[in-house]
Length: 157
Image (tube, rainbow, N blue to C red; front, side, top):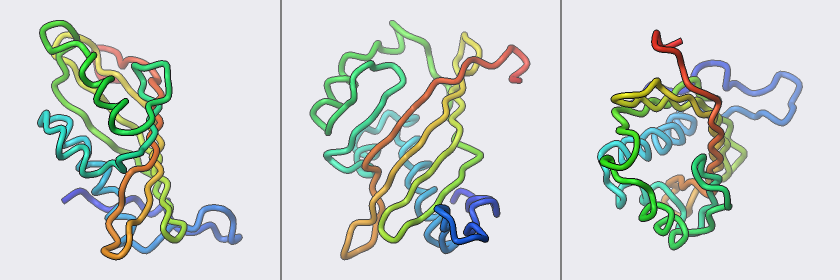
């Protein structure tokens, strides 16, 4: 199980817009994010989709248009190059998360490192908005925004 978010996700002292959240809620939200990427790494579309609201919107880093819902997401997925025709990803690492919970809404901001077999790693800044689904209280991503920030040098920095 991934480590809970760092202490920086505590409530704002002045009662501002960052309420933080209970440690268990913060960990649940982060588990959704990391579980989604574990599904991607495993090539398990069904597992990825278990963390996404069927009507989720996505600003995908490789797609110009806003993806709206599962049908459009599947179209984008099906049009991506295969490992033979595109870069061969060897790993994804989500880290440096800041997670806040606002009742049944959560916002997670984090970095995503994408490692490739024959290319320098790439960094993406991500923001995910999640909604708690009642009555069981599980979280689903309702919006994901990926922003490519650049490639790392050969030394990883």
